[in-house]
Amino acid sequence: MPEMEYVEPSSLSEVFDAFDRYGEDGRLIAGGTGLINLMKQRLVQPAALIALRKLSGSLGTITSENGSVRLGALVIHRQLEASPVVKQHIPLVAEAFGHVATIRIRNIATIGGGLAHGDPNLDPPSTYLALDAMVRIASRSGSRDVPIGEFYKDYYETAVQPGEVVTDLIVPNQPAGAGTAYIKFLPRTADDYATVSVAAVVTLSADKSRFQDVRIALGSVGSTHIRATAAEDLLKGRQVSPASLKSAAATVAEAVDPLTDVRGSGDYKRDMAVVWTRRALEQAVVKAGGKLE
Ligand SMILES: Cc1cc2nc3c(=O)[nH]c(=O)nc-3n(C[C@H](O)[C@H](O)[C@H](O)COP(=O)(O)OP(=O)(O)OC[C@H]3O[C@@H](n4cnc5c(N)ncnc54)[C@H](O)[C@@H]3O)c2cc1C
Image (cartoon, rainbow, N blue to C red):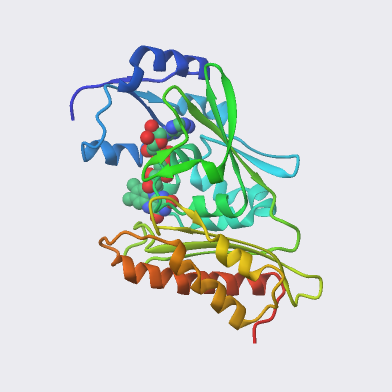
């Protein structure tokens, strides 16, 4: 690797100073689990690494506030997975983090790094989409909130602009009585990425016979994580039954555009997305108190 500078700012204002100094040649590094891989493959070659680790006091906390959970960008995956606040209010997110690679990776990778990486194969983003999270991004001129549905632009491309830092992810508490599921098809090793992954949030009517609200998001099925809105719309107000789940899941085939790669052909992954969506919905319905027979 070519020589590069390494700086460790201890405040956001010093991070912005470093951006001014290095411009587009400077690159933020949090856990480094994604960036170092890109550097090894020479896909990025920064002249300076701007390390965020000294900001883990201010950006490394999890708090419950105003019906949401605020996750600081430097919270590591393992911290989130074990957090009582996360388990209580947004258990779907804790569940997805438990599926990320190995404990060794989860002890290093951060929430903000995972967001800004913009890799459509990651586990947690489907749960952020299914729960309508908001990403807080800071720059020298202030901070802005970007709905997660507008955050992902393309492969490894997000709404984060040069000179900006992801500071927080704000996730609304799961709806009372909702059933949720995060499932991932992982046929190879534990630290591989999903062939397909699905997050589902299901709220049923009081007598548990009809769908009141449904939210479905998928990973590893295209250039970004996606919401399966056609499937959601088809289920809302409909009777809970295996047939309704099957017909809703079938619509996912039209919504996905998976790449052919080492994990399978695009056609195979499209079929898997349909099957996996149905299974995630089945689990979420049962957890919401519904019956499928
Ligand atoms: C072998 C292996 C297997 C893995 N398997 C999985 C898996 O199955 N599922 C999964 O979800 N994840 C998995 N991961 C982790 C995932 O691929 C990313 O590496 C991780 O989410 C990135 O987090 P990080 O903190 O290490 O980010 P970094 O590598 O430090 O940074 C990633 C990118 O984000 C930028 N960045 C970092 N922090 C910020 C910030 N606060 N604001 C703006 N930009 C920022 C960096 O400049 C860089 O471009 C795996 C990683 C490895 C190494």
